[in-house]
Length: 587
Image (cartoon, rainbow, N blue to C red; front, top):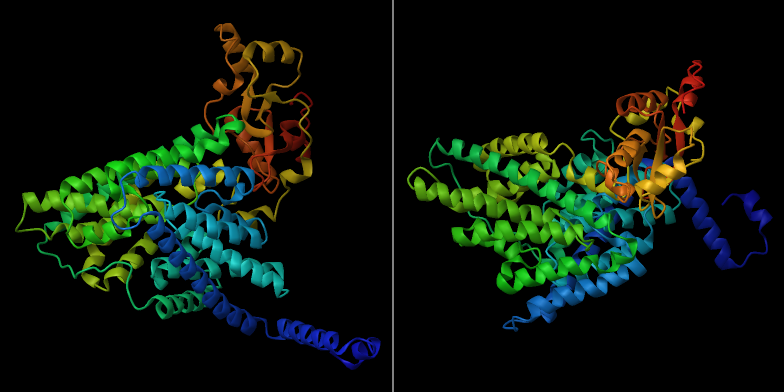
């Protein structure tokens, strides 16, 4: 603190003077040595996040051992997932609705649209709800929630230390990478995941900080829990060159399973979101019941199942069990997630991949025993293939499997399977899983490069106007026809409990009335959960293009992170007026 400031505060107590001097010194450091401070914060975040993730791992294991002690009765495998999902479902609906799901879309939204803000409450609730959910046997993973927890720790620390919003935002992928490094025990893959998935840019300028935090977090994991890998994997080698064809088949199968998994999960999520709001509290119970019944019949379906992945990687699982687990885990995970339970899909993805790969490898080894490796090698490649197909992060997948094996010989088969899986999955299912989940949760992330583009043109925000007429999704066709008969509009936003669910054309409404579908609800006339819309930060030409493609003269405007709430509408008349074209008839 300089002499002028000291002179203005002569009567401050000594404690306050010391605090003021520390604050002044800190502000000076932030102003003059910002880069060095950022690196030091990356080290601190890596250490803190590593300890937090280790604490969650230990808490989950301790709770799990108490809920499922060795030699416990089979009824526990049914009642504990059901009871746990019932209690958590009530808490999620009543107090913590933001804690549902995997949290990767929410983390990306915090980076891209919320200025890096994640509250301390979110961190604490996500920590305890995730640990409780996984300990109860819900078949989801800890990695996605861990990423949000790590990013949240970085956000809280950055804000408390007075960093600028852009610096706080840059800290989020640093914290997310540290969390993934500790959760998966793969520091290099964590770096790539943070850049490839969270940031969407492998050339992000924060690479050094991400690497530093990831390595520090990994070191904390090793210091506390010991030098033990997530999976003990034997060394594999290519037995015969013909195996490349089998790995290609594995890639194709992995792509088909990946697309089916993504499509089915998104479909189920749409169905549960379309149910009345008063039923939301019991949705997680559906996932708990399914998990419990499957766990009662086949215990391997409960929880993340890392131990069973290790069995598959070491060739200690028979073909019949692996095929059964592919089927059961597929439905257990998709239903558990779609019903709103807490947990991520990264862990289940590699579980499914190990079982799919192990199944393909077992069949190949039965048919060609002298030309193929054992099923464990294919289980390893299958993990990477489904990670690439479902998560759409192929580079992270390759590095992750390499870190697990420390063996270069598996890289070429892995790259073949990954490429084919990614291609097939992208062809069969256009929308990536995290993008689809984000949209369903009302989070609409800007595409890469969109921000630079929007800075050079007029934006939708300049011409947004309140929606004068809307339609309730529960309204019948007959009532809507009568009410809107004299309306000058040709389309209307459709709301269900104040949430935007679609756009209704007059043509569709009149055709339904002619068909005699007067008692149908408006919700039934909407083609899907996807509908034409724009965001306030879109350039005007985007609104014009979407109106033209959809045949509409009006589009709803939605904020990117407010849960599909209608912000207003934009009309073709106003868009054209901005370009100096008069179209007074356009509404």
